[in-house]
Image (cartoon, rainbow, N blue to C red; front, side, top):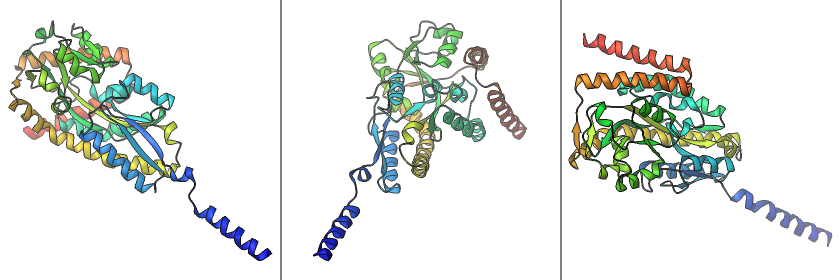
Length: 342
């Protein structure tokens, strides 16, 4: 009798130990807000990253993506992340600067003018920006290239004086754009990214600054008729996860999550750069006029950009050492190009 009871007890214990607990079976879900629409490259890539995270953590973690800004604008999303309702988001450099001011430093107006400069600066500065995010409670993916921003408007603008009277969009909560427009004497219209298309449709806006890829993905091209063929600033973003949310999983799983996320974001980074030229060609095929600046007007744009950067740095207090390093790298790239040309 005793042996039978012991056998039954051991079998019952083995069954309990063999059955996965409910807690072990349920993955930790990281809820991520994405501004781009459902079906966009960024949205689908983060979904794919979530599936790979699930596989590599053996079901312990995954992502749930909320596309198209359904979770609200940048300010609302950051508030939800602090409250634990969301665990991360895709942020533009301007969005991320509300958390970590220096994150936007490579997006100063006309600071970077081509991809040779971008690549040299990113190689040195990107690791520093990502480390800086950690100090503010976030782990960020590699930077995701969004290309250079161009002025797009429903009127021809090839001189600074022609900006007067334009209804120009700047991202809500973006001090760099705000100070830049103020230095030009043009009062901007600050709106969340998610509200721009509606504002263009209703006439609240008539001028935006965005990349050719962004204009296509966000459908802004349908409400503009001119593009100024002059890169105004380099734009980029990241996918940021709060450290507080990451601490719900082990350090080993955190490492897997960031490794997988970075791998997938590299694809978006490269694809966006490759797509930029094709996107511009597509916009022109749609009948949008590509406008050129004269040398004199280009020189004036750059002069005003230098004035704007000085004012921005006085108010926003970017890290002086970081900005000096960026300028030094740019100067070196330009000197090498000039030497090669000779």
